[in-house]
Structures are given as C-alpha cells and as structure tokens.
Image (tube, rainbow, N blue to C red; front, side, top):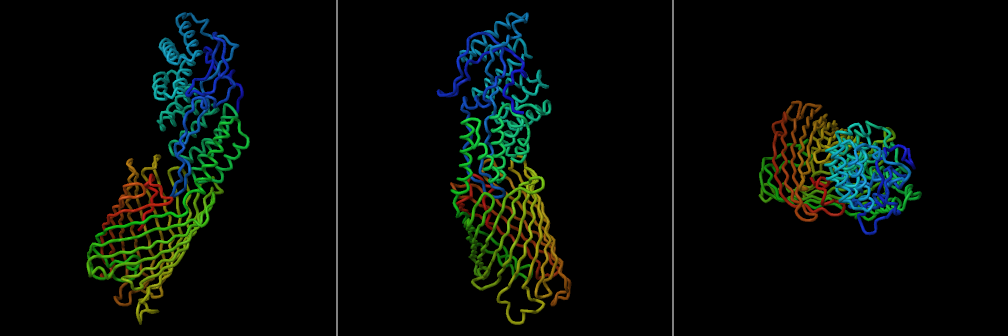
Length: 604
C-alpha cells in the first residue's frame, strides 16, 4: 500500500536531523528544528527526498544494443530508492530516558546534538559507541547505516551491517537496508539474496520489491526485474512512480520500447515530484533518440588471409556433386555485410541488405576455384510480448537471393525465404524456431544433364529448433539445436532426408574479446539408388567452426577463424575433408557497438 504516515509502524529511538545530509552545496534543506531531545521516527516526508539531496548519479550511457533483443538502456541503470534516514516528529519521548544506563543515555544525547548540527563524523562516533554498548539497538543501527549510505560510503555501511545483522536476522527492514547497501556497493548477487530474505520475512514490506527490481536490473536480469516490480507495496506515491520507472526500464531492456514509452509518458503526465517528471521525460527522449538517431546504414567489411587445404570444396554444391582433386593453397578473402533500415518503429523494422564475397587463391591450380558471390535480402522483424505469459519475442520474415560464380563462370543461384520466431523463456533461456524454403538452380550443367537423374536443381525445405542458455552475467552462452531437411531434386539421384544436430558455445572475455565454437553433424539418406554407382547413398558430415575476435582500435577487430569439414559418403568420390585457417581485420560501422564484441556480425 502507499502510506503517507508511517510513524505508528516504527520503533522510536531519539530524534534528530534538523536537515538532510548534504552531498552538494545546493542540496535541499529541511526547516531548522529545536535542538532538544525527542524520539526518532519515520516521517510522512517525500520518499525520494534523500535521493535528491545526495545527488546520487544515475548512469547515462544509453547506447542502443544490437543482436538478439535490443536494449536502449544500460544494465546498471538503477533508479534511486526511498530515503531511509527519516526526519523526527516532536511529540514523543525516547524510551532511553527511562533506561538505567545513564552513560548510554548521555551518548544518545551527544549523538542527537551531532546529527542536529550535521556533524556526521561526531554522529558516527557516538552511534558506534551506542552499538558497542548495546549491539541490539535497532534504531541506532538503522540511522548509522543509512547515514553512511547517504554520505556515499556504501562499503562502510555493508561492513557495519555485516557486523550487527546477526542480531536482526528476523528483522525485515534491517535486512532490506542491508540489501540496499550491498546494491549500492555493487555486490549485486549478495544484494539480491538479502532483499529476497527481507521479502520472505515480511512479504508486505514497503519498497522491497522496488529495490529487488533495481538489483535484478543491475544484474542484467530484466525479466526478473519486470516480474519483481509487477507487485509490491510502496511507502509513498512518489516511491510507487519510481517503481513504475523501474518497470519501464526493464521493458526497454527487453526491447519492448512501445510499452516502456507508454509508462514513461504516464509518469511524466502525472508526476509526484519534479525529479520524477524530469527522469521520465529524459528517458522518453533517450528511447526516441536511440530509435531515430541511430544510423540507418550499418554493417561490416572483412579482409582475411587464409590457408585452404581443399579449395575445390564449393559451399552448398558438394551435397550434390563430387569435389575435384585436393588442391591446397594460400589465398585471400574479401567480404562485406551491408544493411539499411527502410522502416524503423518501436516494434517493427524493415531492413534491406547486400553481402558480396570474393576469394582469390595464389596457387594456379587452386585459382580455378576462386569464388565471386552476391547475396541480397529483405527482412521484416517484429518485437513484442506473447499473448500467453507475456514472454518477449522476436518474429521475422525474410526473402533472399544468392548467386555464386566460380572463376567468373556462372555456377549456382538460390532464392527462397524463411520465417523465424525467438521467445525468451526467462533471462537465461531463449527458444528459437526457423522454417526455411530454398530453390537451387545449378547453371551451366551442360547437355544431357538437364532433366536427367543427375540433374541437381532442387527444392529444399528445412525446419530447425534451437535452445540457448546463458549465465547470469551473460558472458557464457551455450546452444543446442536440431533441424530436419528435405530435398526434392529434378534428378532422382539427389532426393534425400537430412537430420542436423548442432551445438555451440560462446564467451565474452573481460578484455572485450569474444570467442565462439560451433559443432554440427549432418546426416543425409538419399532416397534412390544412384544412377552411376548402383548403390543407395548415405552421407555423414561433420562441420566444426571456431572464431576469436579482439578489438584493435575503435570499430576495427582482429579476427582468427578455423573451419573443418569432413564428409564421409558411400560414394568414395564424395568423401573428403577440408581445413581452412583465416586471420584478418573486420571493420564494423553503424549499429555495431565496438564495446559489445558478442554483438558483432560475423561474415561467413
């Protein structure tokens, strides 16, 4: 519930705080209060006055994210929480006056005086003396911990609470203060555990859900943050609005920009304070800026030197035709991935792209297999929430056309389309499904091949499913997948059913480098007896790829790649293996964030 007066729910100690602690010269100042003893209690003050007074910074690095589900907000954006150092009412007497311990009573008086004149060093000294004499003095612990926090000393607050928290393990409010101090000290995992413990002690504790949501945001767990702030009670109407801002931030990190903007506008239209209004307006502006001012033209260009020990293995075509003799050679590769936003809204994007490719082998025998490739595509992507369980999804439809020439001679062209759906099950797991249709047209097959059993022109349908896991810190991702592939060719020799099992790992290093390993097993059973050999063909193919990228300077990366292809076929002529090692440089431009190596586009 939203409370405007919480005095009856608190345990009085002594009264102080004529003004809030200052963090800047222009910090808000409370009216001067008489310098006399009176009990301490939580007042009906603005829940976020302390956050405004201390001027605690909020990270402003709101660069857009690419790849997967976009995120215009940084993972560590944490709205400031309610002030927990209260102002005193004047109508109660401290229970300490009736205590037999006159020395403790004297120290309390000194602490009151120090707090009234904002002598924080002296106040800290006297409060520590109180706790040394009475470790179970709840209000002294609350005041000292919150004073340390407000003076931007969260590490000292954590140390203090660690020392005395054992006496208050069943106290929800002290446990929440401990969690907040841990959060401000960037001990995120420990903060989450402490805040969850506070909620278990008192599920109706004011603002605990707000702080828990903020902790999940700092831990880069936006779905947990969103779930946490969907419910919970707040200490004030202003605190409730800050919880709404946390909800909007979580939605924005999940790519739900329209829903986030709606909440920001709702808070901005009816703010409980000027600070709330300014924050809501600023983040509405940041969302629009991320959407509208990001370059429409983006992509990457890659220049590689390579060693290929079997240049005659041509992409795609060896599913059908036998590779020529093994010809090892050094060479070079130049490729690009150029993309342009035709339409860009909060939920829908339309992108056109073009990807040229060229290889050149230095050895004469291998140069007859130099490749020139062209690929164009048009795709539309929609981002939203599923109608069941409100899970974030990305849905896409794509049409594309490819052409491949060998040594300037036309060889293969392909056109087709695909539909894809990716759903985040939670912050850790994402499920994806893709249906792809392709038509292969082999060019220049020669007389007698067209329409014969050896005609490789084909229609292919592939349905794939994958599941990805990632750690809480998102630095390690693992994936497994399965795909069924059906190929119908004009020639009976190339009708087959295929089954593909795949897995992969990727890791983001602390130095911003990135590594990935992918393994694929592709089994193909051909339907008909082969015309020439008279046997029923079965192929088993293993594909292994490893990549490492390291930032060099600004948008430039160093790339190291390795690929291995082993095909074992009942047709001896179709049994081969191939190793390709590459080293080179990639230039990323536009939306490729040089500070997010795992989001860089890999050109294959």
